[in-house]
Structure formats: C-alpha cells, structure tokens
Image (cartoon, rainbow, N blue to C red; front, top):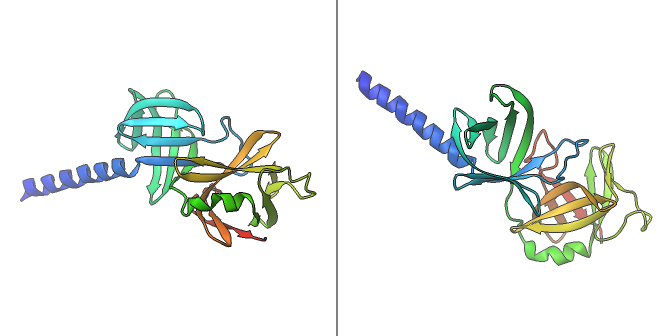
Length: 218
C-alpha cells in the first residue's frame, strides 16, 4: 500500500511537471508597465519544440534550447528565468542573476492568439475609434499624425506614449503600434475586430488578460 502511494505521488508530480511544461509553450507578449520603455519596443517570447526565442516584429534576439526544472527555465545550461506565475493565458517570469538564485526583475506576459475577424483590418485603418484608459479618452486614427489633424496625442493615464498609429501584423495577430517620431513606443494586441469596436488586451501589466474596447466613432 505504501509503495502504491509513493508511485501515485511520483506520477502526480510527473504529470504536474508535464502539464506545466506544456502550458508554457506558445507565443507570449511582454506587457509593460505604463511608464516603461524598452529596446526593442516589442518583446515576444516564443516557447516550444525545445526552443525559446526572444524576438520583436522583425528580428530574433535569443534562440536557445531550453528545459524546465523546478519551475526554472534553463537555457543551454544557463538558468535564465523562474516561472513565478502561470495560469490560463498569463505568465510571470523572474529574470535571474548569473548564479540562478536571485530574481533581478520580473515581467508579465500574456499569451498571444490570432486576431478574430482579421480580414476586416482594411476597414479598421480607414476608421476612427475612441479608446479610454485611466480616465483619459484617446482618438485612434491610423497612418496620420494626430497633431496634424488637430487631435490630442495618445496617453495611457497621464503618460504620453505617441502621436501616430499604425496597424501591424505578425503570424495572424494584429497590433496597434503607437509611434513618436518613427519610434514605436507602445503596442496593443487586438483580440477581435467587430463592426462597431476593437477588443484589445495586453495593456494592463497587473492584469494582462484584461480586455479593453476601442469603439467606432465614424
């Protein structure tokens, strides 16, 4: 009986490890805090097929083999990350020091998925939307400088993030990219396109799955 109990515990631990390893596979979008800017401005982790890639829209900055052990992601014998939280479509990674003992800083990610109704993207580019965040209303107009149109620049709360927007696509996922002087400052993934609104996510670093709506105004 005792032996059977030990075998059961071992099986459950193995199953738990296997499930954690499978759940972490996929495309993960780094959800930055409102006043945080990085270079590259877009950071995506692609995990799967025993490889972990760090990339933006155009380049790959990390491409290494990995394995998961004791909630740590180990890349080619160098411990890089600790899985601090993994549930549903949210992932929090701690970036470890060279010894792999201490967390230097943490980042929140949301799982990327293809945009629903992506074929309507041409309609999006030719439309205007109103988007509210942190008590501030923003008007989204694509492929134009908002100041030239006598519109306010884009704010997240009280943080200025840009004055022009573009619609960009990666592997079936659409993004609203906000620029200042050709520098991409912030990116909003689009979950779905509807006739009267856009559903956005990956904006709130404390709740990466939280959805926001940009409502059609013309």
